Length: 272
Image 1 (tube, helix red, strand yellow):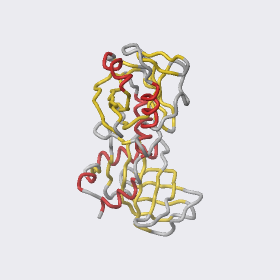
Image 2 (cartoon, one colour; image 1 turned 30 degrees about the vertical axis):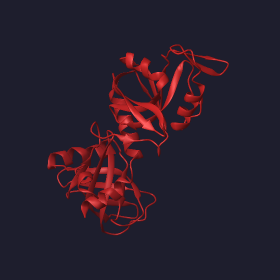
Image 3 (cartoon, one colour; image 1 turned 90 degrees about the horizontal axis):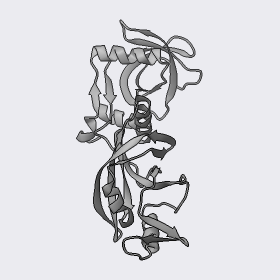
Image 4 (cartoon, one colour; image 1 turned 90 degrees about the vertical axis):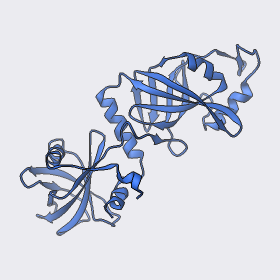
């Protein structure tokens, strides 16, 4: 793991460890446990927490780990991933005691981290249409030039990997998302949409499609900058979410974390 990525892991102090481990117990969070370098991942539920000794009593009906071992573990709370080192001791067949007095780290990729969704992740955004073109006999005509822009538009759809009209809500336009964070996203537009979006300061409501559907009440257009891709002029639009509530923020955080590369392997690399 490179030096830049290692900064994502922040060591927790005693008070922070107590708080987060209590949340594992209190909120019945799933705890993933594995031996370093092993491919299996066991899922446990938490039955009890000893605050004084920082020990969790955990249970699993099906697991590969047995006996007493040094292990790594992870859990997610409020869209943030936590990773720790611990000693696992078997109580009986499916009950274990996990000593968490060793280091616990937070890996929080929030506002300063943007997930590159294109081209490996299928993420889209839809919002109400506010453009100055009309469709006539399946042709798109620019009001400004009076000339057909059908070829240009279809080339642009091919560029962003989108089928014309596929899954679009009535009265909405749909774009492939380039990158996504809990505070905003970016997408590509063609020359046709550029002038209109430059005039618009706010858009919404937004519907984000990324494994789950996420509703964003309103967003602010922050920039429209030129891009050159395959000799087709396009523009990157960056928007910032507004009026987003805590539940939506946490939902986005979880989806982004889930889409990242194997966090558990990354944590093992960090410990080397």
